[in-house]
Length: 381
Image 1 (cartoon, rainbow, N blue to C red):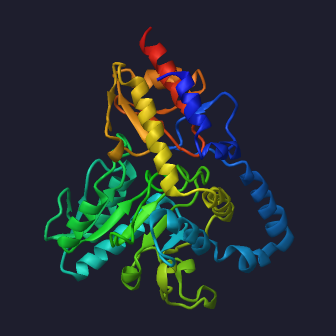
Image 2 (cartoon, rainbow, N blue to C red):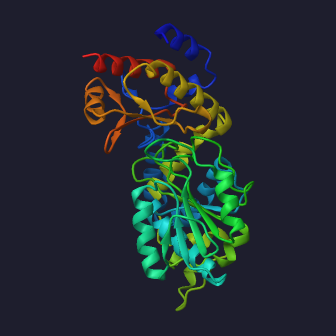
Image 3 (cartoon, helix red, strand yellow):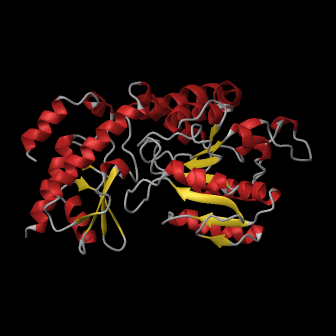
């Protein structure tokens, strides 16, 4: 693969014009959007408007006028990206907190069906495992790695954070349902990267972050999906005031709100929420299907550029590879550090994995070529 080929692909790229809407330092090749997405240029202006026009301009009145319904309103903007009909996604809290809420709620639903076990599948992200262990201890639920007739809840990650391999979403969901279990998907490495069909596969619960491929910003709020059919039974443990049916009545006892709003807990971080809202504007200009098509081209182009190097591609099949290419090499940590010295940013995962994330809305084919060429030079010395 040549630089000329990369430039030819960039010239014919229908998404290429979107790159200019992101604020990336000149000369930097940013291949770490699977950890933290690059910011859109519109976000500082939007936040300035929120601070001066809403917070300073309207003070407490900004809550009913602009802010109170933001968790549900922003959730409705994420819903199409995960294949969800309206009324099933709410934004707020962190991924870890939302996992805790949904694991407990799922185990409670399973307990009502006479089941107790929590099945954690695959190489789950550490926070998923940590929270699963804690929640299972609180619920006195055994943790397993297999789905059986005793399984109350199945926790699975859609894309493996180390390798980039996409799990068999349909098959795992079907297996969980056939066993009578509730399924909870972690979408952190798939939302904004590839089509997710929650409703089509009758998924029960899902959680995802927004600071990776959605570019919501560092610490941006996560989201929860609760299928309409399960919302009345979604008995989550963090019964904070914003999830109350009538939060301003200040009643003594808790009564859960109707619908997905019952997944809310405490007062949301509104500046982060509205930065995310601004970041989602880019999806009004393209589709997740088109973004995925380019990402598959990008990752395969990069793989073709490095296939003869002394590295192991951990997800060689583009059909089951997310928007990252993970390469195994004994000196992966050093390689990532030396690439960073050249303003080529990927990241390292222990013990020997170099990860390169390809957000197709701002990564170009020339970026992929430059990263591969720099890697080739390092491995030749």
